[in-house]
Image (cartoon, rainbow, N blue to C red; front, side):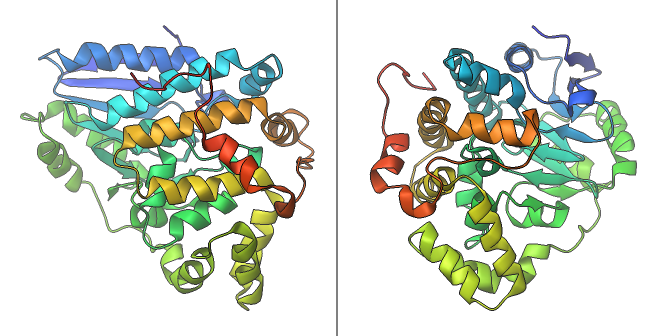
Length: 351
């Protein structure tokens, strides 16, 4: 159990508050265990009609996993991170299948593991402050926590664009791409949560959705909607190299910027991400995608780029990662296949 998560019942609502505001509520293994225990207990508790997830502080719901700890663990062999991934992905699957309405307030920064705790819920709220992203390729990792399934099923090639560039979504884009359901201004969130506690009959998703609708407003425009033409054309290519060529040759300034973002990220991670997203479109369930992500994440722990990417972004903060291999051309099909293949000793993520 962890003192970095508040777990309590407020009337008929089970409340989970991620409580590491100074670290943007980034997730430790203990936090994952605490959230899982709360959900397991409430699933059969008739006094709890719905569950609400929020984050402490005013900066965000959750910035993802504690990647500094992951950096140190990966250098020591990665056993702790493998266990973290396994328990995290099991929690993601539970949230998606939870028997009671599960509402997540994605106010402020919601990235990586924060997406896994929120975007698989039944009712997902964004505010004007929401910044939603799967930025893993920036640190030598691949979108996980079921994020590759969400990206794979976003309209057109928007998910491919977001996954390869590590770009962020505002509230309108999060709604467009299927990461959220409702826009509620941040000033209205306290009243919404109080209304949920006071309301009767909140034991169905429809009832919770109706309560949210009383506070929801039209979302800001989705910036990505205006860019669908070049995104769909460029990212439909079969290789990252061709995608970059199309982006650079499109004549669209935003496309050129996207190409530069892709080229700045880990060459191995972006190639594995493209393969993972293409496969995720055909996998039958979230659970199947989580199994694929687990294989990829475990492989990343044994590679060079994850430790180097976190070093550059978080430890030394020089923003100058030295990837290996250093170019897209140097990452072979065999390299990508190794990330996707089952690995002896890792076992399944879900059982």
